[in-house]
Amino acid sequence: MEQNEVTRCFLCGSVSSHVHAFARLSDKEAFLGVTTRSVCDNCLDRYIDRVKDGKKDRFTFLWPLIVLSFIGLLMHFTAEKAGYRTLGVLIVLLGIIIAGIAIYQQRKECTDARAASVEENRKKFSPIMCRENANKAGTQNKLVEMKLEYALDEYTIERIGKEAGVSLQTATLMKAIVLKAVVDTIGKQASN
Image: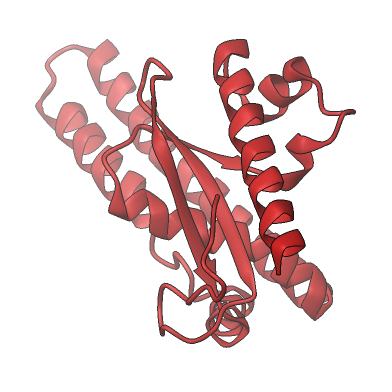
């Protein structure tokens, strides 16, 4: 979480205003380190515009539809018993239902982004955008956002673990890292 004087956007390299730190964890919650991502307002606004226009993840609903329809139709037409044919039809219907849910979620996200103010959208989508980029870059199984609020006294280790979805040992380590980063930042500001 320790940053340079100026952080740069991971997309365009200009000065960023949104910085997010993520704890990289393995599948057994072994701590693999901390990764940071920062994004500038221009890149974030372009991302939000893509969400508002419905262009972000536009065709994700096709994958379950195509795969499950292929499997279901293959099972329906090649099976000799009626039970397997019925199962094939149910698999096709499952693909249609999953695609419908994906379309509904995308439309809901689109209308919510249109209804929200610029600041609300920036607050909501900056960690999402940074997490998507951090997921592409690492081999970790889980990324957990490390918020500065974790340094506050009202955030107990149990609360951090519950909110972040990690074990108490990992939550203790995350709180210690955030506290150290805050102390180091305050020390740097005091020396300047």
